Every structure is written in C-alpha cells, then in structure tokens.
Length: 79
Image (cartoon, rainbow, N blue to C red):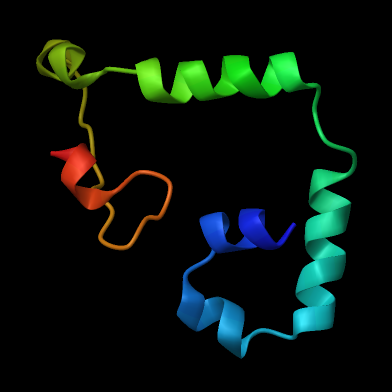
C-alpha cells in the first residue's frame, strides 16, 4: 500500500495527512489485489493509450488538462 500511496498522492499531501487514516482509506479502496493477469492488462492499457492523434477530430468544447506533478503520467509525457 505504501508504493500505491506514493504513486497516487504527492509527497506534500502524504506528509501532511493523518498516516493512520490514510492507511485505512487505502486498505478500503484497494481491498485485495487484482490477479496478476489483470494488473498486466491494465498496465498495457495505460502504456498503450494514445489519444493525441484523435484530439483534432473532436468537434465539441474540450478542456485538455496537463499535469504538473503527476507521478503516474509524467508531465513530459503529456505534451
């Protein structure tokens, strides 16, 4: 759960949060781990997702948000 907490929350938040409450919340959110095959498929989906080429085809008002401190998707990978 520690690794997942570091992945999901910036250090500033984690350091200021109630550690016991954070551990309890993470345990409730995660529950039991997904099977290894499911985890691998999810990672392939994350790393294989490419939407940049489709963005020009959107014909609706759209807000594209670029992270500045995202740990999972580094800002340089959002350009």
